[in-house]
Length: 238
Image (cartoon, rainbow, N blue to C red; front, side, top):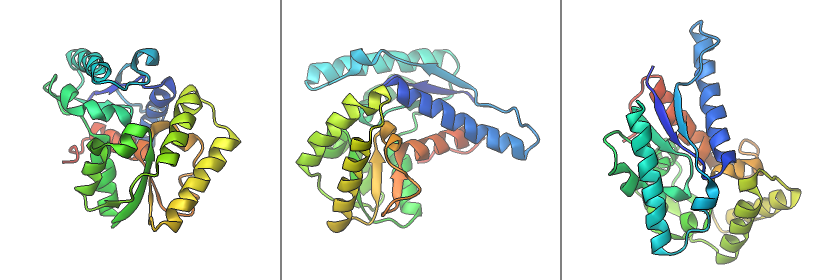
C-alpha cells in the first residue's frame, strides 16, 4: 500500500483526529476484504504548536512556511508518496510547501469543494479561523467549484477565533462553545445559507455534523476520506 505523510501538530488534537479517522476508514475497507487488522501506513511529523501559533505578520508566516516545508521534505525523504497538511489555516502556505517537494499535497479546500460540487451545493457559509474566513486562499477554491459563500461576520470571526484557539485546540469542548456555534449556524441559515462548511479541524468537537439544521461539510472528515481513498489506490482529486 502507498505511504501517506501527515504534516501535523497545528494542534495535537487535529493530528490525533486525522490518525484515528484515516485508520478507521482503512480498517473498514480491510474488513470488507478479509483483512480485519488493516491499518494505514502513515508517516507523521507533529510540531510544537507554540512555534506556529498566532501568526499575524508576514515574517511570521514566512517562518512558518519554512517549518512546514522542511517537514514536507523529511516526510518525502522517508518514503511518503503524497502529503496532507492537518490544518485548514496552514493551507495559506500550501504553494510554499508544495513547491518544496516533488510529491503531491492533497489540498483540504479542493476536497471540500469537490464534495460540495458533487452534492450540488451552490450556497454556503464558511466558519473557521480568522484567516480562513476572511482571506482568499481558502474561499477562492470553494468558489471555483461553483459555491457562493456568504461574507464573514466580523463579530463571529472574533468569537470563533477565541473558541478555536483557547478551547478546541487544547481539546476542550464546552457547552458554551457548542451553544455559540449553534447560534452562528442558525443565524447563517436565516441569512440565506443552504449549507455550512466547518473549516476548522477541531470544530467537530462541538458541532454534530450529522444532526444539524443545515447540511454540514466537515473539512476534517472530507479530507481524511480523500486521503484514505488515495491510500487504497484512488487518484488524488484534481
